[in-house]
Length: 113
Image (cartoon, rainbow, N blue to C red; front, side):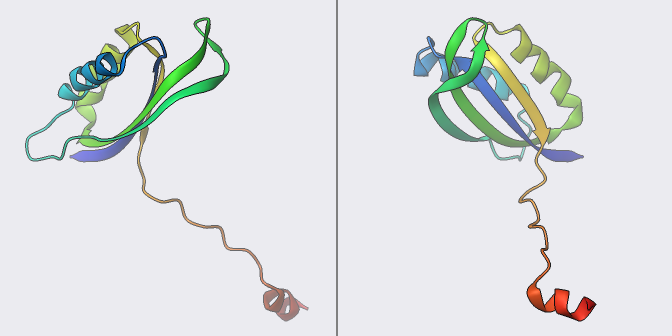
């Protein structure tokens, strides 16, 4: 059974774009399955970090959304952890758009009185 996941990568800003793309290809080869679309990438580029990570002030952000079986995730995360070019990463289950909270309207408050 497959689930939709979303992963945020923060790469070392000293890496070239081609090196980042090679790393992404290697990581995504570990989760690729037959008949499932390749990961959708959203490249945010270089951004200033909120706090230094491994003595770096900037990082290259990439977000990927993909579908895979949960059994493929341990090896995928292990490969990411072993790569020195990745400063941080986070993998979460993608549940789609978040529901908008319902707020009380003025007519609802009048009904309560």
